[in-house]
Length: 141
Image (cartoon, rainbow, N blue to C red; front, side, top):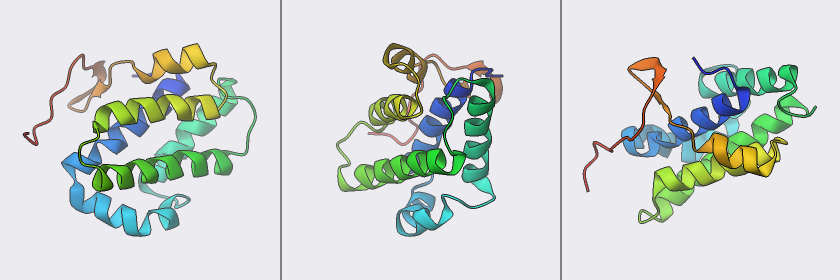
């Protein structure tokens, strides 16, 4: 598995962003009602909060209110989802990588470190311990 809390946050953000392609109907719901779910006790919010708290506990992120950090993370993800629908020409994976880097910087990760961590290979969904080197979208052109 992934041991670095910053990598967990970045990978979770990037994988969540991919739902705009893999589950567009779910992303439509999040676009309309997502802000109300950022602080829910289930689903992606609970996992993101767990990863944020791990980073705070380990000292990877400087002390900050986890709820405020979750607001920054969730708001950024919802903004990316909206961007994907408003501008289909935007490269979703590249935008997610860039925003994951920005989120890590907001959380206090040094810029060079955030740049590297946000670009690490994503875990293979079929095997959570194996990173993927290059992924292709099955959605087609």
